[in-house]
Length: 148
Image 1: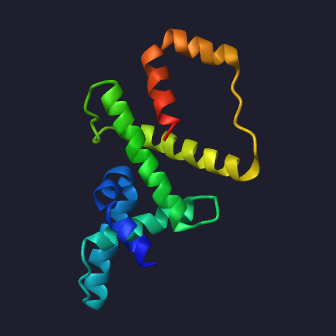
Image 2: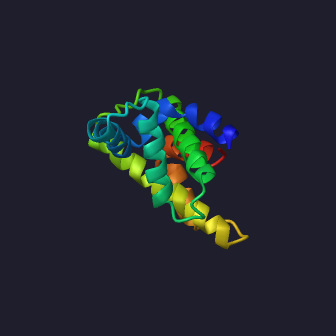
């Protein structure tokens, strides 16, 4: 359990970026706790609350380790995108929020699929070839992301 706490604390900066709404709820909770019972909790607890909210949304076994794994994967994918396209990512846009939502659902889908199936997900070779030819940089980026 102490190992989980150590692991979680390394993700505090990412939680506010990757799970903005849940983090805001965590901050609101800290203010509410302070107001109602007079207990001041450290700001890191907002991240813990956010992670528990995310964990409750994941359809898998509900283990915090899955939430932490997905958080690391999101962080890694965002870094791959940033470096592949050699551009900073504006985290204050609707596009960023939508991209994160799609990534979260995709990672959750992969997790659920891997729990149910032994085979890899198959994609039409024609579709893959078309994506490679029309969007080579995007294909390269997604190919790197699949190896995290």
